[in-house]
Length: 146
Image 1 (cartoon, helix red, strand yellow):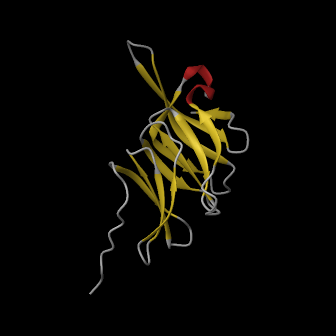
Image 2 (image 1 turned 90 degrees about the horizontal axis):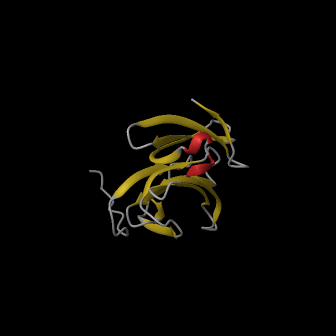
């Protein structure tokens, strides 16, 4: 029989989870404003990532497995270092052209890890419009929107 491991630690909804390339490390993003890194083979919590000012809606590992990105309800996308626990970069929602804000529900790394695609929106009161923003990971600049 197989055993189901319970990973206990968050104080809020778990909104998103992602495996690293090694298949052993998992990161979870929560409504408690934290991410947690786990070893799924033994259920150990490896690290807590603090610094988000609102719930974290989405998390994705970079292709190299050393960093991961989050998108929060504070309209900030962050790049975190998985080993040190530090926040390496913050990309504010207003950095996307035309005052679009980051949508906390969607992120994806490019296969080479150089850009991140993220959901963006703009609410002008009468209507909400949506785009996909392509952000350069090293600069945070929006290099393209779709």
